[in-house]
Length: 139
Image 1 (cartoon, rainbow, N blue to C red):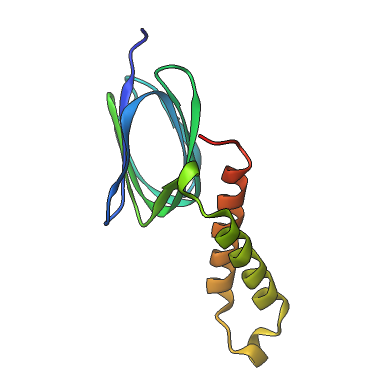
Image 2: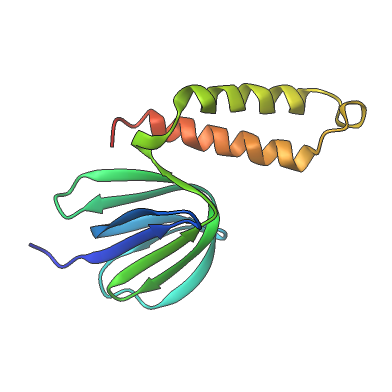
């Protein structure tokens, strides 16, 4: 078996992922980055998006993250996320309802409705990312 790196994804409430991976791809604030065994250490912020990784068997897996921080070391990637969900834990109907609600809020006149435009945009992005992951299969 090829060498692997340890992937840890945690939130304030729980550990979401703790397993060996061949490669980890993550949505950094300045763009997506990938980490393989032996990577140069660094620390970065994350934006809303999808962490993709291949487990030691070669299966690609997906985890939604709602921002946070990532630390890459030569043999480990640690993600401290505001919230995170594996694909199988995403409530698809709830994500669809969130998408519709955010789209409706953004379509309304922000001044008349008294909504927070930025907050609605973030809610829209979270819903879109969750639905994209749900389309990838049951991983």
